[in-house]
Image 1 (cartoon, rainbow, N blue to C red):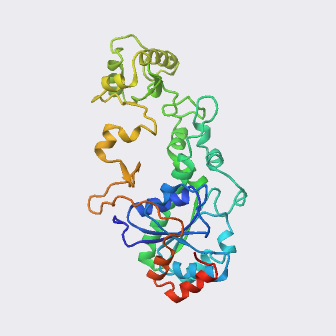
Image 2: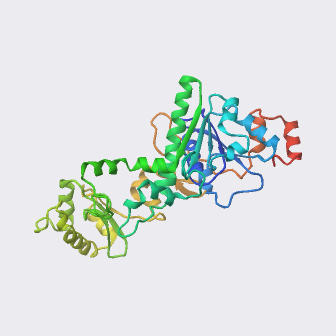
Image 3: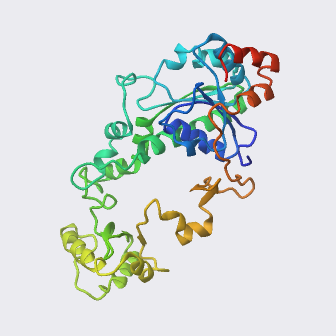
Length: 375
């Protein structure tokens, strides 16, 4: 693997959701990511794509010798990622206090929903709960709040903030020689993502009601419309000159309409726009607005998007052993990432990693196998 993070070593303790996705992002950009899994096969909740490019080591962490081997593996790592509830790693004897004794430059990334402390820290939750408390969920939807998949919480507020945190920790450790713990809570990251909306609330340019604002579907010129073929188009004509191009494309340029920013006139505008968009299929509207600045785009499904001409031209999707999937992002001019490798079988790299990195020799590995600590 190549990329800007070549030379960075990451130990990821197997989990689900944002932790593995963060590990995938680091691996995509060239870091060596070694995923520590439990012996006995894959987790049925695991998303295989998240493990692309990683090496997989199976160690029984419930046994003292297994924990000792894990600590040896951590000794030379730059980053550790774990996504368990608070206290689980400490219970295994692999908490940050112990690991930082063995590797004082280690950046110990902790991925949780509620964080390492606070009244909810020890309770269960999912993406929808974290973004509910953070205020993001309450702002999305028309009548009832609508979950935006798990993009805002798990992956936006969780994985991306964890990646920013651990890479910031590596930069700090390079200067100081000392690692640290990164407490990446999804609820914190999701709240951070709402900073712009909080700013607009403070300025009085946003109401605390769903479907009532410029960017939440309330404005008819920033919304989606059904087309004649039961597809949709997305309209984002916020600026006056973009709005003028929207009206021109809809044949409304010389029509007597309410002013764009007249909220009282928004229902009429929405009705007019909806009636016109319903007269043609999505592809025709894409052709009408092709090359314009009206900010109109067809709404493509997940199954279609890899064949979108723009994404095809940019190579946004890649083929990994016959499976089409989003490629590494962002782009780098001097250190471009390579195409990801397919995921390893769970535990499939155990021998190669432990012996190759000098964690054990062949004789000790055979003993560990005999004790059922490694496969």
